[in-house]
Length: 328
Image 1 (cartoon, rainbow, N blue to C red):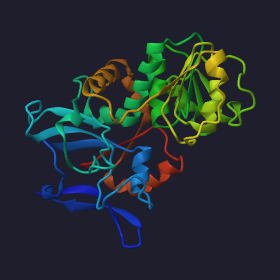
Image 2 (image 1 turned 135 degrees about the vertical axis):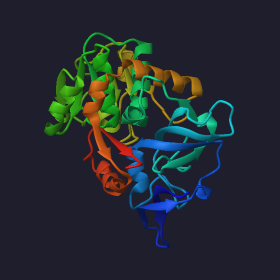
Image 3 (image 1 turned 90 degrees about the horizontal axis):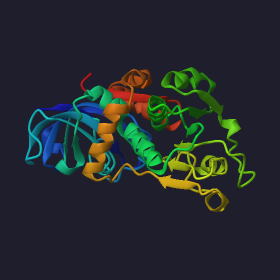
Image 4 (image 1 turned 180 degrees about the horizontal axis):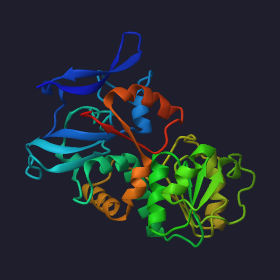
């Protein structure tokens, strides 16, 4: 039977366009498990895939959506049976392999994780890849020991930053949330931030390699010059979990924070995590993320909304988590 999907196509001039189309199961890629998708979400990578340049996509036509939650419809793998609730993040789904912006998906069984019973599928996608990455970052900070004092979250109004703020606050940490938009301050306080830090306070121009010790830990979702400046403001032995490249991949930093303050820079990659790691992360999300704060992040969307929202997220106009009801 035909089902709806957001399909990105490229013309002979290299221009791409996205539209909701009816397609059949015969067009789905190979994989052991077919999933009836309930929800997906919008991430920065999705915006790149939908955008006019095509971004990360290598072959067309293409169905974006780098994560999804749904119910197993058919399986050739003994680990999954029809009716099982599953979630998927990573593995280049939505980039190299058709993703979650469709009512059906077919993927390798190794890419899936059983959805914890405490989480419904809508909340799982309110978390999504961004929240999965945020929890990885929180767990990395915990493993190295969070120092006394506030934990800084940069890019706090974005997907990773929003969930990281809510998780850290729920765990009892004092959270200082960095934002460059005054209109997001009430939103961030609602997520549990005890202090709002203007982006200008974390000046993106590095002036000195070491400044006053201010932060007991940091989840940086920006990168670039912002990350370089934050490194010089960390407490002795504190850690920075770096998850984002919105500010660029270069790091104009000195080695002095690492040598004289023992600062730890922890790189977080959510794409190729082994099954047991992914399962543990989702179990921590289900137990430690306050659902009332999660609701405050959600912006509802349909497949038809995604072309415009994909452009908006690249312009920094989207806050929180866009949850896509693929059946609406």
